[in-house]
Picture 1 (cartoon, rainbow, N blue to C red):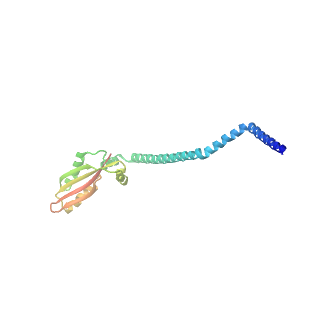
Picture 2: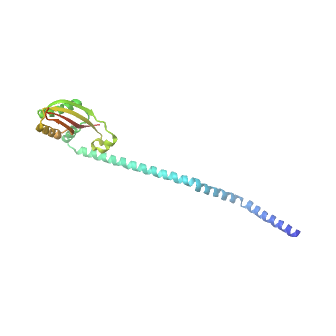
Picture 3: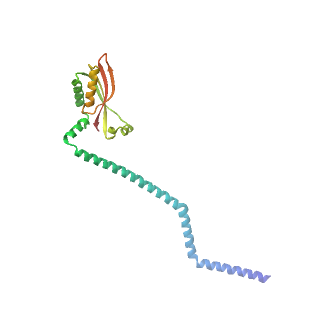
Length: 205
């Protein structure tokens, strides 16, 4: 019985010695394996999700700037088309365009032109006022003229000596005038023979 116990202890010592020898022999590789295992686990649970997140953000950033570049390129192409089209217009046609849509608001010039249109129809200009119209970004998007960098001005004028036929002729004169004049409102009082008009005209900003 004592011999059996000694034999068991000896086997345990031998086994322990073999394990120690194995660990000593392969210690370097075991350390490397442990480090590799830690790195793999760290990458899987911490680094890889962060890598995916950053990669996704980079792709979104690239896509956003790609779309922005495409939009600006399209705008540039449109501007080049406008410039090319403008170059093909004759000098006389360019003068007409400037008359239709002047570069700068000139109060005296506008008043004189409107008074001339009134006189042309044998009517009398009683009152006139012009105000720069404030527009929102939504209105500019909806209106193609405003979207092209055009400023709208509101005109309120009162004209006397008007009857049905002279009013019709006067409205035709406004419509056929080379300057853009939009009639937004008409208030005609037949008894007093006075008509109040609300107009819009436009200038480049």
